[in-house]
Image (cartoon, rainbow over all chains, first blue to last red; front, side, top):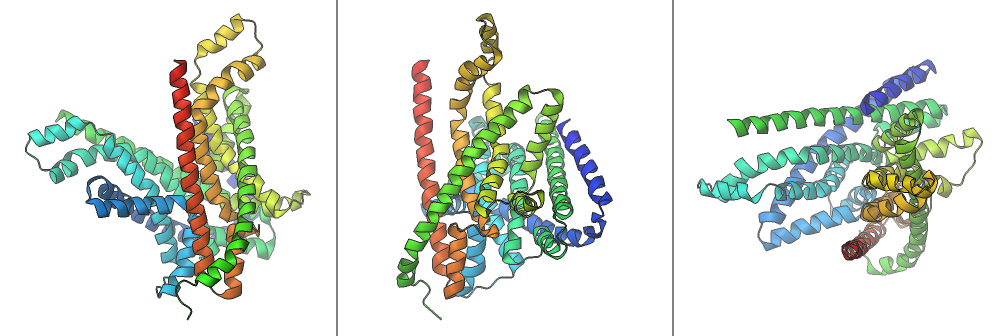
Length: 238
Length: 224
């Protein structure tokens, strides 16, 4: 219901914006959207990988690895995403590492969201009933087997909704890459605004594009959640 | 090429950054106060208003939460003058932060209000209290304490988003660091110091919130 309402508002807004002659801005904005989607997709892959690695290191790693994971999570959650982005962009070259702006964007945002994701993964693994571990031990599985085949699949189902929220946070954070000269959607919007001063139409369209991508992420994650829950239920009855 | 970390330069810019951090803290608290008020208004509108208001506030909350804060800052900054409202960059920034986090706070309040048992409303009717008195004196005092930790998390989140205001030239920490860096071509020290400041403040406030949480929990336990 709520989603239907927002979609209706979206459609009405799009119609209005297009009527106002904003159609001329769309091609340029969509080129920016492509960059935004690239950063978001790259960042999401890195975030999931970093989160899994950090959570597993923190839960099952030896002491030094555990400290490293804690340091990573606290540092990236404790400092601002923009500071991290600027640090990689301005400071890393001093250490002889110069990355392309798009790489900087993906790495900074991926590691930032990954730090939040690590806590999600840790929580989801912790929420799997201990009896599952015990049953796996009784079936003569070793720890790695139990984790990979019994615990993680159940944890994944629990992780999907919070990851949906994090992916939307990631999408919103991609607008920051416009401040390190990457020509994403936010950058194109500012550029068009400076050239034409038709602020309402341009930013109205931009907000609607971000909203549409957010809604798509929400819908995708919900479909994934349903499928994963069904898969788990089937596994249980078989 | 200068050394990787120049202590003299770092100590030289530290007072300047400390001064800029005052602006950051001001913006954080002003924005958060606004968010608390806006959030309550949104939450009440979304729960108790007539159907059109409920639908309207729901749509606004979802819209604000699914679009980037940076764009919302730009919209306010570039569009307000066109509507005849010339606000300073700092006021615009506070307004944007307050509205954005107000939408998040609204959901927190909503969960708090929904957790107050219906019987409390019914008992108030039986005692002949008006709906406003019931809300103010009976429901809100029960709804707010359990959601304080969640609100505290949004205070930290808002604080960490204040660097975005550097995009509209508010002279907070990040903007100051960028200016210092562009003057000396040494970005390492200013940006690292800003990061360190944020880390320190986040860790401190997380510890503080945990204490408040524990105290609230202890008090709730004692009452029971």
